[in-house]
Image (cartoon, rainbow, N blue to C red):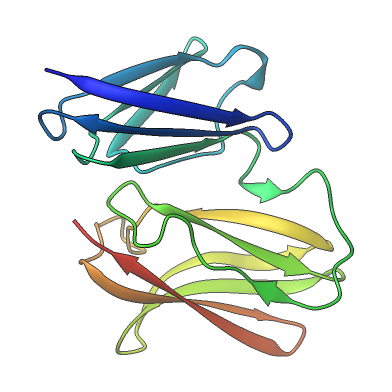
Amino acid sequence: MTITTRASFDSSSSHLILTGDEAAEGQGVIEIECGTLGIPGAVIGAAHSTFDAGILTISGFSGDASTIEVFWGAVGVLDQIPSIREVSLGVGHPNPFRDGGMVCEFALPQATHARLQVHDVQGRLVRVLVNERREAGIYRVAWDGNDSQGRSAANGVYFLRLEAQGRSLTSKAVKTR
């Protein structure tokens, strides 16, 4: 088995990006000693990840041109908050995404109740990601690609819908194999 991997780490946002090619899809395993970073907030782009005794084990990659992102402390509010003027919803990343899931960002200029939902193309509710009062800030929320019952959602187009401060914003996400 051959795996070629390149890595970049942004220490200001505690964000690791691994890209590479895998000779046999789904066969690779990467182990990362997380040190003081601790348990990651989200692992996107791998079918499986476990954290035990300070070691993050990532497996189940998608084959050629795989991208895996690891966020520490990223699911939740970001540490550095720029001036936020209005409610906003970013495009999920990666997009399109695979079974490993995706992360999307939203921003709130002031404390308010926020509701972030995933809908299919027929408008049916697939999953509620956030439904609570949040302080002003920028938030990253992971969607693992599963529905509210924990089943893997079908491949296709989905819409992330954020409702906050009387506004409703929508962003498109595409799930592929």
